[in-house]
Amino acid sequence: MPIALLPDRGVLELAGPDRVAFLQGLVSNDVATIPEGQAAWAALLTPQGKWLADFFVIPSGEVLLVDAERAQAGALVQRLSRFRLRSKVTLRDASDEWHVHAAWGAAPPAATGLVVPDPRLEGAGWRVLAAAPLATDATEADYDRHRLALGLPDGSRDMEGEKSVLLEGGFDELNGVSWSKGCYMGQELTARTRYRGLLKRRLVPVDVDGAMPARGTALTDAKGAEIGEMRSGRDGQGIALLRIDALDRAPFRGGEAVVTPRIPGWMRLPAREEA
Image (cartoon, rainbow, N blue to C red; front, side, top):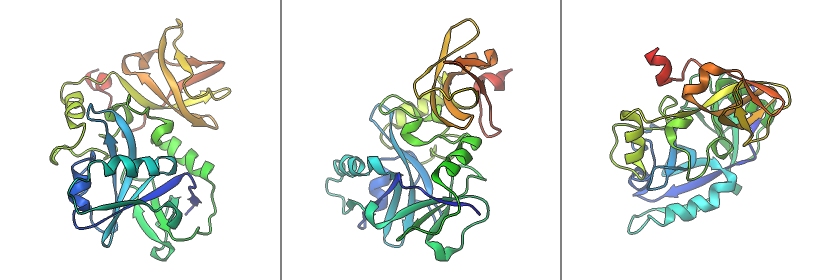
């Protein structure tokens, strides 16, 4: 059971009797039905349906804890507070009170802290929130290699604020969107993208032979046509934003490296379904 501390993660706390209803109307997933001991992966969007942030929502007694990028925590509190109006809810950045860990393999014992399964994918592992840093036997880089092997996007490292749409990042297959809950901010574009088949690009896991291209490096096919760009990566594995209609032209070039898509079993690609 490897476990790693994730110092780049922070925690928001939502309290008050309206905390669930308040968040339910703002984020992409159904937070009203999360059982204790579980989590939901959800995103906050612009009114136009573009990604702003994603996070894990974890019920804990009389509060909701939000496991988010630490660099976004303060801004998230401010952004969410704009919608509070008369709702009986308080929001605060509690990042200094919690330490976020990731574990994979066997479940950590409950005594280690607040332990919930990562809801995105079987095999993704566990999120562990604890009041003090736990003893670890893996590093943040080890966890990064684990999530890259599974093809899981990592927030702002792979998505682009106010530009990315959720379905590009696999939020449908990875349990980050509820299609049955009521309205939420940005729902219209998300639903239209799905039901009208408008998706043209996807974040796709890739194998990289050569020096890892920097984030934003253009990827080209054998004829030099640009077909996407590199996002996060390390140690020969990465995530790239690629045109779906260009996947059969792989491998690609990114600088001096050869970049080859690696389609995971969980990913649904419309072009391949029609073939």
